[in-house]
Image (cartoon, rainbow, N blue to C red; front, side, top):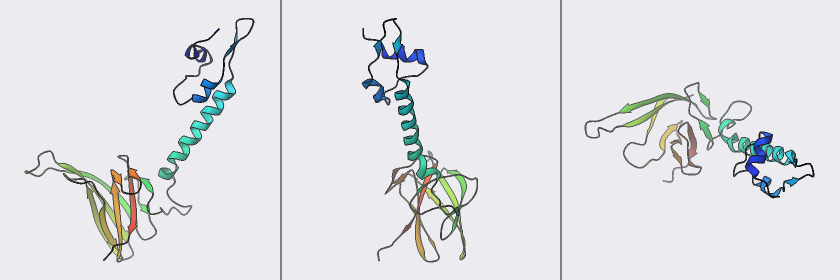
Length: 173
């Protein structure tokens, strides 16, 4: 007798969703006493596999630095005012965002400000999508070119609102 998979899983306290395709391959059979046999190990293995996949997918965002706390160029990191990010050539601090509303464009836009501190000095770098193309903001530290990307990375694709990528770039003369 075929059983309603959602009803049988509700009895065990496990919800079935589309991501748990492995459960579909398991046949639920009816025992002679009218009780069902549900293979819970499959559910546990599936849940563990999904959790591991989720953790590995977030690893580049939360562990973009090495053991010394230095963040690698070209990796996604969280934008936060909690403290500076230490890159190999400089220290980058998110100073926050501010709204700019010029008379010619009453809708305005957001500008994100960063403080860049290195051995050669300190500078403020601002990134904004403005009213046009969303692209990186370039800056120099000790003669080397870098860029900050928010919203979208040319190499890594779309970025969340709380993510950014800082890359070292080679300028072609």
